[in-house]
Length: 104
Image (cartoon, rainbow, N blue to C red):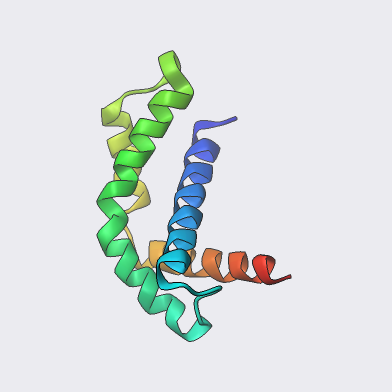
């Protein structure tokens, strides 16, 4: 598996786990579509730093001796998170798609 694909999969896993935790904490089955953008924006701001720590810890554990180092990961994260609006829009799209698959 390529490093980019692994990072993408870890980010999606992180987002889905936080989505499920949000549903559990608020005792709801899904986020109303009209509220998704606001909730994602709020969660993005509070979780942006944590996801980088999650990525570092997960990649070290998964890649072991193949881990490319904190500086390289820092550069990758800087590139990924350089456009907050793009990131939020991608997350909104992912959550909407995820909810559709959960309902079906």
